[in-house]
Length: 311
Image (cartoon, rainbow, N blue to C red; front, side, top):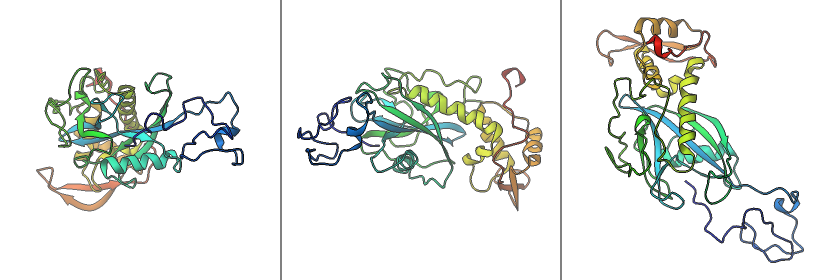
């Protein structure tokens, strides 16, 4: 995570260095009348630069539970509160590069592993008490990830079951502490940890900033995207059985699926799965065929999420 500049090291939001005034720039250099105009000087006077950040909704499946990576903030604002990992975009990087850097720093995950996509932009005027800060959220999906390591300005980091996100006033230490990778108490619900009707992620008022909203949007994006694309395979190892893939759908959607119907759908959907010609007995019982992800970008027909009354 990137620590924001200390108070007093940054020109106040909305103000603009004036050539010849001796005002320090972002880099610490002093602007004078002979210096070439910088971007802030050639913008229209009514345009106010807005700091830009990235935040990550990193989802994985651990112990048959849909989990999200959270960090405990070690600095103000919201010191001691749990938050999504993220940080400010550096001057020399674009959004995707910033997201990949934060993902690597927080999880050790390379972009080539799993799935990473832009989720949405959040820029409410009051989302950050320090001033207006816009953040671009990313959604990352990956197989069972290792125990996370807290970033430079985080006091701790850990995996949380999406149903056990800390509430306001909770210290968030029940079940597992710090970087031990625990998923909190109550993680193993009968429906794979997705809770309730498998759609809502409620009670997330304890997260810093507007991260409860971002997390809810990320979980819903994952639940909807596996309906029409093969990204559910991002939660699987490189080779997997149909039973393993079905369990991913059950955990993410929070519902049980008929094994025979699921097998028929996924094996008959063009480009979804590619048989390897190998089998395994790791699921128990008779040898099961191993598959890898195919080259399809969209699933046709879609794997429609069951409605509550259809379960």
